[in-house]
Length: 358
Image (cartoon, rainbow, N blue to C red; front, top):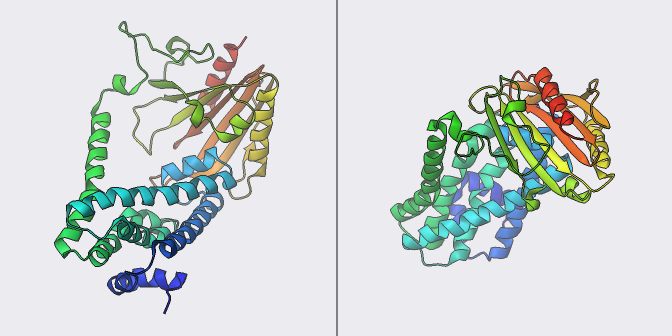
């Protein structure tokens, strides 16, 4: 009897070993089709959750992405990521499967990897429960799948899955530990030999001497052309710079930060970018609707909004503020993220930045 979409889901959850045995002779195409439907469902549910339940405790990476993207754009980005990442993990897993004796081909490994993400995609979008489930929910079905589809022993299947899963975790943990242990001077922007901050080549970026005294962390980078946001590319963005300010040493997700973006556009297009941002904020619906604030009197055009209930990884809800302005062909956007946002500091930085533009 052919396996339906729902039967495969319940089978992976409740009859893992029997399900993989019965799917052993299945071609890769049906497994891929099941996987694509699952990722589309997850992406839709996650997008709906982020944009309609902003006060729920959802990981910081999701809530920050929701601030930067429109719902439809977020859905597409998330769908592509959720399709590509497990497939890449499947290739990495196959290296270890082969080392541990699996010889039935990469197709069987990819089947095991794709089906193993069934529990994750079913529960990860659910607030709180999804955070607790996480990627660990993929390990058991992945282990069973490798054991049954490659006909290897329990120890060999477990060894391949553990090596593939935990070696990257150990490497990332080591890098994070080094970064957290580094002194504050090592996590700020690069400096020259005499200690002067080295900024990207732009006359519009605030220098150390132009910042308020309570700013202790300050980074600045030029964005690669391939990473410039899609909407900005549509308006012909020529250059983009990203800056971050903080009044305390970073300690996510509890640190208050201010992000600052500078974009250079062809004549007339910077104002169109501000209009697009205004349409975005006005299009937000409750409970995540944005409140328009009196904008500072800076630049040729300036808008300001407060967005309530942005979720943080700590489970706390916090407000986010933004100030966006254009002056000539220069577009600048400031927004806060993290608890207890300082709107007055945001305005201060925006006014200082506007003063640098001729």
